[in-house]
Amino acid sequence: MTDMVSELERDVTMNKKVKVKVTASPLTTDPWVSFAMKADYLDQGGKQDGEKLKFNARAGEFDLTFDLDDKTDLELAFYPTPADAMWVAVGTTDPNQPGFANGAITPVSVTDKKLIVINANLIPETLTFILRFSGTASSGGYPPYVYDPEIVNGGGKNLEHEEQGEDCE
Image (cartoon, rainbow, N blue to C red; front, side, top):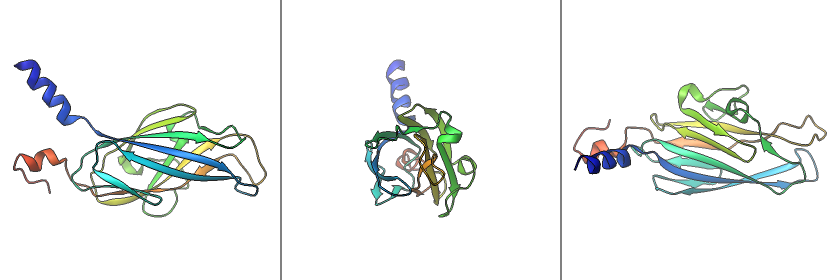
């Protein structure tokens, strides 16, 4: 019985998962790359709306996995550290320096083609982030090559509290 309770507790506390495929397509002029994303909310709790990743109120934390699909000849890759691969700022203005929006985003890992972070989704707010990629040098100061979508958090505590009759606000 104890093992079953332990398994249940682990399942309840696991973050929801979102896989985001980021496709890089070539352009013939500056900025040389066009980016698009397609998000799959594996455990629900939100939806993609154009260039925004939306997360429901009281949906809890989310593990976000960004997978790069490079269709260019630029040999794009995420920068080797999370602080260089993703910059996040609160609001709708692109970040101009490294940061993770006062802890709203927590870096987990990065490789050339994959970045994993945790979105706390605690506060209803918009976060603008830029994914930053290295690659073959092009005119106009590239790299970095950047993609700048948004995260729209609904905030609040996880739904498990509400289901147990607790106040989530």
